[in-house]
Amino acid sequence: MKQIEVHITNDCLVFSYNTAISNEQDLINTRALSKTVLTFSEKYMEENTKAVASFLKDLSFKRQIKKAVILQHSLAPLIIDCLNKTEFERISFLENTCLTFKICEKLAEVKHLKYIDCHSIPTFMLEYLDKVGIVAESRCEVLTHSRFMNENNLTSYSKMYYKINLRITTPVDDEDIKDLEAFCNINRYLKTIHLDHCDIESINKIADALYKERIKNIKIIIHDNIHDEKIIDALKKLNKKYTKKYKVSLKLSYTEEYIKDNFIKQVTFTTLKVCSFLIFVIIGGVLGYIFLNNNNSLRKVKEINEEINTILSSAEKDTIYNTVEDNEETSNNGNSNSSNNYLRSLLSLNSDTVGWLTVKGTNVDYPVVQTNDNKYYLRKNYNKQKDFNGWIFMDYRNNPEVLDKNTIIYGHNIYYSDVMFGTLTKLTKKKWREVEENHYISFSTLDEKLTWKIFSVYSINVTSDYLQTTFDSGDEWLEFTSKLKDRSDYEFDAEVKEDDKILTLSTCLENNRRLVVHAVLVKK
Figure 1 (tube, helix red, strand yellow):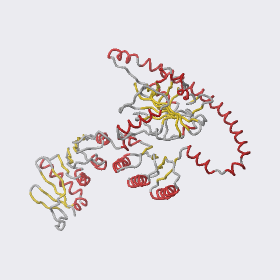
Figure 2: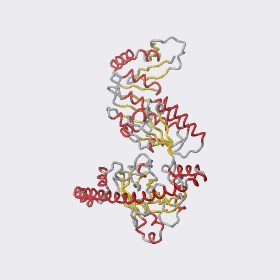
Figure 3: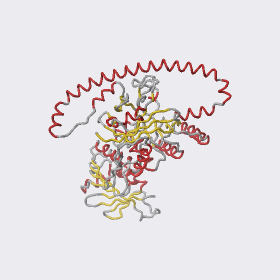
Figure 4: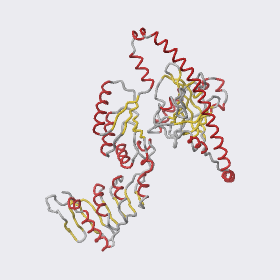
């Protein structure tokens, strides 16, 4: 049976476990070891919290004590419950570990508490405690977050509360799971978790964390091209287990290229021969359908662009009129404002809008959208209607507010109508490259006008090695960008440094190849 010792000093009460007292000693209630030291059994405090709280309240009132010191975090929940009705204004935690969400949640219920000090505290909890008037001081300022917190931009309590979709890079470590559990304690809207790779151990850890925090009806989408039957069978068994026990479902998301390749491999020569005539007829019908669908899509693109330009023109005029005084002030103090706020007017047309992309010397001049996967806008236009042309969209993993080290934008190569990325192949022409101005790309967010300088253009067989968005070190980043620059089919004078960010444009070419463009951020 654990014993809890209370040291009474002139200005505070100090709570700690007493390891010197033998478990055989009978301390079911309490014992005064001296005038300044009391010892309770943990069981007694748990079963008589109100009585202990009343005793501590009277003791602190008589001695005018308004501060408590807790030596071990494992002791904190029980002691905080006993201090709930006292008039303690400060609580100090001496253990050199980070304060947990559950402890912070209990602290928020202490009526007269104004200050806490501890070794460290998650930054998102500062906002939570501040709302109830508690100031938190830490002896060790932690300015970094776990990979899980960083890649989901969970920098505040409110962002954690309203988050709908999570992305998790595997394998997960203990710190990721710890932060996931804290997230689950706060969040009320989570529906989907995206995993970048199939890792059975990580999936089990995530499902256990969801079950532990009683989070149900969650879909885990695994973005991986898996062909190993053993792994697929294992996932099926896990899905059956999770659906029944955890109310969590697993979904495997293959790339279109993988599905296409494996489908072709499964079709035998005999079947092709027997069905050749039928396929010929179908192809003729498909080509006719594509022709009609393409004309209809071109009309839609034209109508959408007209609607976009009308809204932008009106919003830009309003912005000019509303910022005359700001511009005069800017000219006086020498600062410039790169606000691109008028683009926010496009949110009335499509709430998925995250920016605008323009590639000089081409027809690429479109608003950019983003949703929670990389499939939706392959066959949907800006008005979210079915459209063979799709639209220009940002990788679902990227953060459009605080751009990642590598921001990735996709679009179909509609070469026969020159829409979307249909004219991006002009970057491979000498005539285009001879114009220095063409080497600068404009990709602006809803808040900033950004200019990027091209440093690499190349074609490559289908691969995902240039689609990495997060990096663990500067050396990994420089090695990655050096690889991209070495791949370039042409020489560009732009350099990429350790602190830089880049923009990647990716589109299809013939025979399962990709045309890829990389540009480095040079100006805001």
